[in-house]
Image (cartoon, rainbow, N blue to C red; front, side):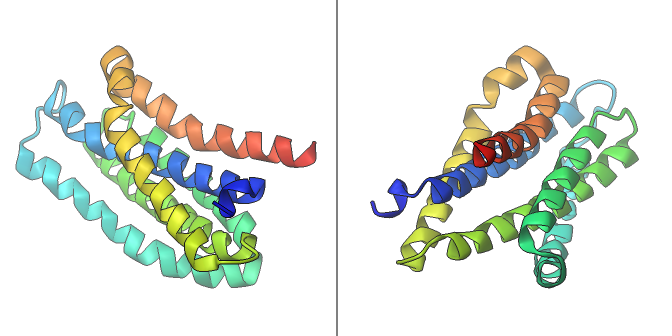
Length: 183
């Protein structure tokens, strides 16, 4: 309960929810989008798009290295911008551009997530292990929201609505956090 009284940590936990909501929302509804018109792709082909996660494996350690040189705050912001740009790219009608967008989405997400997780230990003053555990709880709350709470967005706005929401949500959250920090 100690960490839930720390406003700075609450903002970090919130970012974990937001990042994962956007990322999971895209990947949850991607198969439905690619099975529909104009793509009509097979499940085998759609399943192959998940190889884009490989960029996440590369993105996290590279982000750590660059964070040491440029600072984790700037690089996390860049990761969020890359995440949003990749998500926007999935609006293309070209399957190749969509796959590239998914790769960029993974790179941006895993960069932002790795640096957000790292920021927990920078922000917590005591009991850093329990603070990290709470971040993981928030992260998995984002997973569940991204797969379920995004359903009405998908139902009302289709792929375009989901992409707009998922791409704007983390950017708007960071802008809100920056605004609150200045007040």
